[in-house]
Length: 239
Length: 239
DNA sequence: AGCATAAATAATAA
DNA sequence: TTATTATTTATGCT
Image (cartoon, rainbow over all chains, first blue to last red; front, top):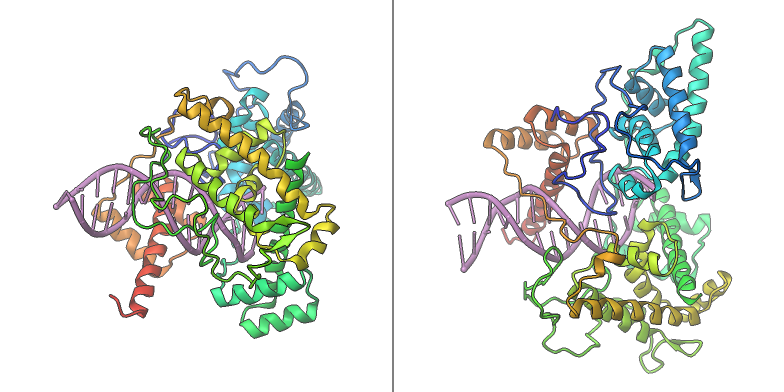
């Protein structure tokens, strides 16, 4: 490895130009290395002729706004003497697993900022970068909040940063359970009768099948979701 | 998990999947079926005993028919070398902006198929969502139309598919990497200790061995798969 | 020319 | 929405 930098936007040709939209796994190279300075090149040198008009809106999200935020964020981060890595790690602690793992680093800052620089025409690239405009927007408040707190701590002299920095993300995702065909059969049967089983029912099923209650609960959630998707799609088609 | 899938067709054996990557030969013929018959046997394994005579009709709509359509649709899709994703993307272009792209994929065929299996008891659910089974029937033409156009383009040689599928034609498969014995030794050692290395570990291994992170990740996926297969076979006394 | 398995796609739990 | 499992495809090697 050792290749690529924080932002590998330009690697279009990459042999692993996977797919348009595969839910691409974490191909994000998390060189969350501490090259503190290596950073989001916000003033990207060869910025690809972003659309000059002030809009640059994708999916109803103003990318310019995000870009501006990115700049501000960088300044504040640097003024606190923090690396991207540190921010990422800290976030994984305060914000939970969502931002944990290797994805943090790249998704968190560099990718987001990079993404913010893309013109609408380049939206496709978002997918390659594993970040969608939506994600970018979603993460913004999180960063804002955290940074605010960090500054507060800094100002108050107590550098507690180290307390929540450098801890490993840990907190990993639960292992995906796999249901036996028999279990699925029973679950589906129940679902057909009642898509919203009561707590007692869920507990009963869980016990009966030997799965954790929570797992069963989630199964119903997902199942309902699937059904809803179906319906939505259908309604779409009939417009 | 056992069954399911978009539509589980019992693929006899013919590995001649004219598939993806290369726009292969002209023969659109879906190899698979010598017994052509558009209505390939839908072996619904554990279909909730819907009485055939009644043919699973809801609001005067034959759900079995929809199910059949779903199946045929998959065949045609595959014969064009399209992925679910691609169809979904294309549809979202022609039919309007729309679904979270990830949902499209699954919603497209499999869910529809699943929906077709819904029993009458679930009709209530549909209504609650302001949609009736009738809607199910309405999406059919949309898919049919689109698929027809796609096929026409395909036949006429002009591969305009790429025009409304936002992807470039080529997209070649990544070159199969080969691991050095040394690398394999290390990987296997790790695997023995932990079949589910964390993201950090994967990154570490990748770096240490000089392979792409993604490659290492996949290796573990496949390895787990292999292990599972082995176990399964052993339990059947086949090994 | 077949096999082992890396890579890609589909399904689905979290 | 993301990450992992399940299934399929096809390549590199013998």
